[in-house]
Length: 462
Ligand code: NAD
Image (cartoon, rainbow, N blue to C red; front, side):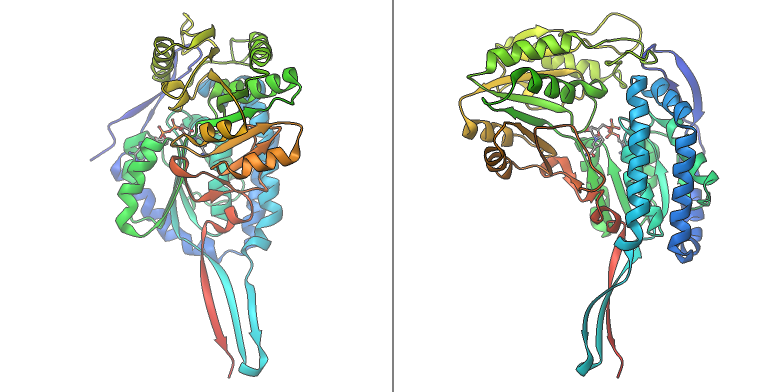
């Protein structure tokens, strides 16, 4: 089948069409796969210092062109411009980590020597081959680079499909990568939506690295299941924070509100549920609402904007449904609660109190500017509620007491746990989820080795 589909790129802040692109169909996908397969051995044979040098050049180009890249990101996903610049700054820090740590993470390891037996045991880290990187739109530079940078450094060819909501950014990434010296048959962008991603998965790839929703991740796992290839899935979350009774209420409320509403609530690790000790509940809720009222909503190109539009229009319905359901079941709507009437995809920052786990807002990923706050009697009740979820990406606790924090966080089922912070990712720490939040990991030195297959060498010299 030839290319027939086109992909509209729409500004979510205005609803206006930016441009229309041809989407890659099955034939183009198969051709690009063949090109990458042919090129991969040559790339793997290139010395690692040269592969790292290309990433260092990519870093330099990102830094030089940062402002223009941030503007494109804001135009196509609606991210407030300061937050787009923050993403680019964070990308540079992440690239610094990969540049500094990759050689060590990937070098040959001598794990055992026995001179009397003339025996050596070693491990080498071999590239997987040709991998698919199917990506999300909410932090396209972060979630993309977590995969394609270490994958390339490890000697893989990468078929990179950016989200259909972040296509222009995906094209910028590919252009800069090629300008930096990564061959265009080694880092190969594919443009399109779910159908292009599905066509990519039908190729005989050696691994799939996916960032996106649980619903799509489950389909990908099923389609890859019988092929015995590496499948890594970074999926959604319903991340809780518990605020203990010993905190400074205003400071904690401001920090947790930022964790819930930054990026207009569209982060995989956004705070999506808040539990507050009952003895400080009312004061916390007042401080929280007062904080959210200070957020500037509006044109994401405005330097002062903090809340922008939702990137995907369909999410407006998800949020409306969560508000209606919560109100019907007895929640108190303290702020917002509806779409904002203007062109584009706007939803008012929404705070619901008196919520419980019968409500969708405390169970399903919201991925928008909406939060539920629930009172709890003690730490045990908080831990039980934090764990009462299909997801397990991150969880946080606010308290002055380090021992109490450690006790609570050690009982919480999540890939990352936070004490007096939230909505945070570090390149030095593994990024992973439990349950429906995914399998595998990125970042840290383990997230560099994730793009390789360990080969065991048993060497007897006599
Ligand atoms: P999505 O699942 O709708 O799409 C993700 C990607 O999959 C896109 O590139 C899309 O085109 C592609 N796709 C869709 N159907 C496909 C199919 N059948 N076969 C192959 N590819 C297909 O997710 P999204 O809206 O882009 O991203 C939002 C979700 O991502 C949220 O759930 C969020 O929590 C999650 N996320 C997780 C992390 C993490 O690190 N855990 C990071 C960012 C986002």
